[in-house]
Image (tube, rainbow, N blue to C red; front, side):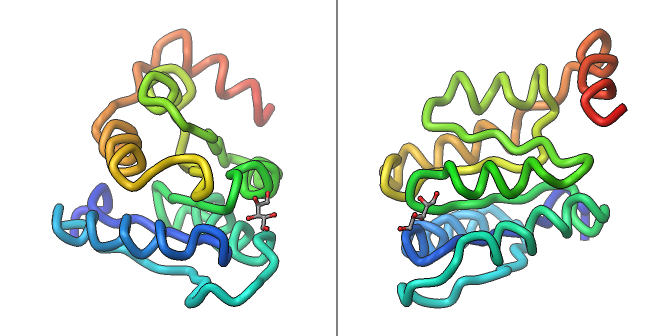
Length: 146
Ligand code: RB5
């Protein structure tokens, strides 16, 4: 399987429903989606799921990941602690696009209590289909980890 068509996803309870909908959406588009949980709307700690997804991206097991929690804030904070992870919290299409073009974001974070289903699909689509521009932006993102 083309590694560009595989992705890892995780959420807490607050965004469980949206995670399931995004999984279905990506399956229909031919993606293989690894679900790191959670598996229900029972209250959990978002940190556990953020660590699973961000860890898998940081380790190179997956090139890209999707994280969701209620606001997206907690998941962003967790994911960006991992070296090599560039997690972008997006609720507008311009940011989703720019996070790929200029920042080479490798995790998109969505707030399940902020974005609706259709916007979430559009954000994910835009993010997955937009390439990194490289060039001067490569030097800039390299200096994040340096
Ligand atoms: C859960 O209530 C909520 O705090 C969580 O989903 C997230 O928004 C944290 O940042």
